[in-house]
Image (cartoon, rainbow, N blue to C red; front, top):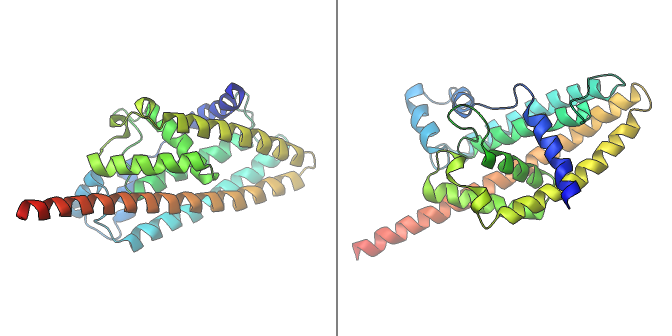
Length: 256
C-alpha cells in the first residue's frame, strides 16, 4: 500500500511544482464571466460562488470550453513528449506523465471553481495541504475511483453548509473521510504505474510513439475531464438544493 501511495505522491509533487500549474481563482472567474456580467456584478459572484446565481447553462458552457481548450493543448504537448528525447525528465518522473497531470490539475482547478469550489491556494498563492488532497480526489473522480466520489459529495456539502471561502478552513486530514482520500491515492498509484509502463513501450518506435502518446492523451483527457465536470456539477447542485431546502423549512417553522 505504501509503495502505491508513494508512486502517486511522486506524480503529485512533480506536476504541482511545474510553473503555471496554479490557477488564480479570482482572475480565472473574472475572465470567464466578463462576457456575461459587469465587474460590479462579478465581484459578489466570486465572493459567494456562482452556484444559485449564474444560470447553469452558462456554467456548463464555460466548463465545456475549458475542457476542449485544455484537451487540445495536452494532446499536442503529449505528442512532443512521446518522441524519444522529446522533453527532459522531471526528477524521477517521465516528462509526458508529469505534463499530462499538469494539465489534469489545471482543468481540475478550473472546473472546481466554475462549479463553486473555494480557493485551493492560501493568501500567498500557494497550494494548501488540503489542496493536495483535493487534487488527489479530483483525479480519483476522473479515474473512476468510487472512494473519491464519496469525498467529493461530502466536501460539496461542507462548502455549501459553511459557505467556505478557502478550502483550508475544512481540514481533510482531520475529517472522517481522510481514509477515503488515502484509498484514492493508493488506487491512483496503481493506475499510474500501469499507464507509465504502457506509454514507455510506445516510445520504442520513433514518431509512432509520439502519435500513440498524443492519441491516448486526447481520448483519456477529454473523457476524464467530462467525468469530473459531471461529478462536480451534480454534487454541488445536490448540496445547494439540500441547503436551500433546510433554509426554507426553517423559515416555514419560524413562521408557524
